[in-house]
Image 1 (tube, rainbow, N blue to C red):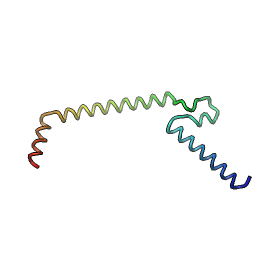
Image 2: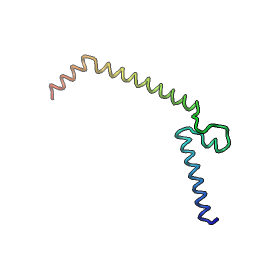
Image 3: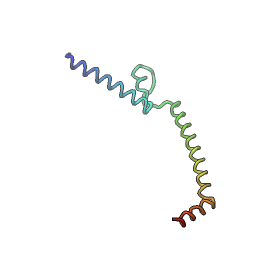
Image 4: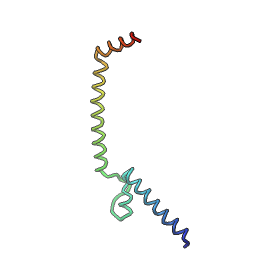
Length: 91
């Protein structure tokens, strides 16, 4: 093997390792654990990661529903509509 082939081989292995870590971080595939010999299914997401994201989503949805309710109260109150009419007359 020449020096060029060795450098290309090491670079390819490093690139593959970085790509696997990227997939682990983005999709929770656990490819790194699978390559190191841990008995996991690399294509099955962990339940802990799913529960954390669903809890975060539930909290965000609740906060958004609360904000929508406040905005609906503001828009439907008569003083707001009267203020809009006054602003139209001024312009």
